[in-house]
Image (cartoon, rainbow, N blue to C red; front, side):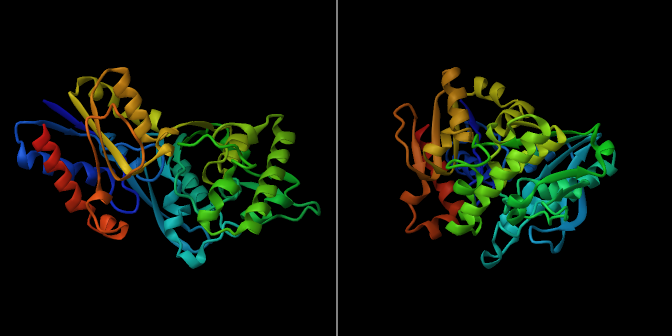
Length: 365
């Protein structure tokens, strides 16, 4: 029997690769006859590049840059030939800030811009940018500033590239546009939110980045203003494009000023790793993530994998930290929270619970 294990990460606890390893260990410890293949996967957010680096034999590059609030740090990206793979979270991620430091009003994606600039200096002409886990709500003006764009207010004063200044932008100039003319940027994300409004970047995501209600409303107005400036400049309604609300509206600058393409992160990663081929060949697929709920079916790993399984009539089972969905088609559902005394214990001891779940699956099969 061929078993395919293809989960996303358990956010805040284990990487997708670790989830695979512990489940596989548990399964084979009680049923060594099973043929188990581990295939960690992601949807374009944090952890995506980790999945690609071994498969594509990528080179790591460490760069001196800045964190979301401008402090010097060292961050990394991966590249091969003329292609670079960069995670926005590496230099502009929420994980880089203490809780007391989180404020999307004053944070910037400039550090990610420096990573892109470094990749360009190494001859990279195609950038894959994975935008999950950001600490920012700056509409991508930080990245643009690092690459030579300048943003001016009504008095022709240059604005600092932070979220608080989005509402003051009246004019944009580029002092380095020639160097970007041959650059291709592909932005990977897993959401389809617009740039602003009730379902936009500020209202949906800024709260978890440290913004209060007053800040959220100001950031939303700022994104609306910036969207209008971009529309006047490009003749395109950038703000309404699906995915412009991801990562604090970072795609707005990338698409509007640099001609980037927004694409589904899972689609790119599953294609690169030939996931569908493995699902077709499997007798059973096991997938999951830290929390499986209705959002898991909005472009994320679990929903996409279940769609592939149904397409090819491949049986599947679910594992998760928490499972909040009903699915009568699944072979089994195992959640860690049902075994642990609390969420804290579940996250702290996820390894032992996954091994135990693997043993139960191996016995069941």
